[in-house]
Image 1 (cartoon, rainbow, N blue to C red):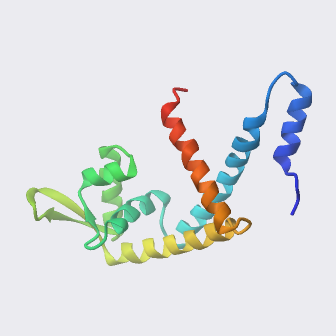
Image 2: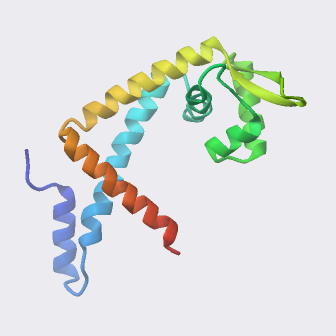
Image 3: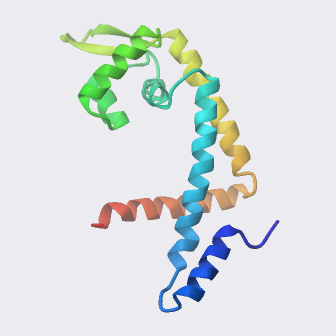
Length: 167
């Protein structure tokens, strides 16, 4: 395993060019950015092999995590996927046309609608998450499970601090 990477070279060059600044954040955030590119590539690959767009995976994953009967109101899907209601309506329409979800009357509210995952949607989301987890596990193979847990804890702490930062 190499001890240095391209980020070390960039930081060293900046430190020579601007010795008046501290470049410690670049060691972390430049690596996070580069790692994110790898994660995005493997996510896209997992979704493509499962014949899903990433937004379709997001909707189906929300339904799958809900458990049987794999149905949620559009409002709950909006909340779970953090998109606008208009965007969600469009997504539901497109997914219904592809046979991944169907709309049905909410049995608890005759005026309400539920979005239910179809068997085809279940097959695809299960295939996608299996591929994704396998690929992510391989990508993290250079870390022990203890190191992965520690990194997860540190990244959670960093992510939570973003909520408190007003940048």
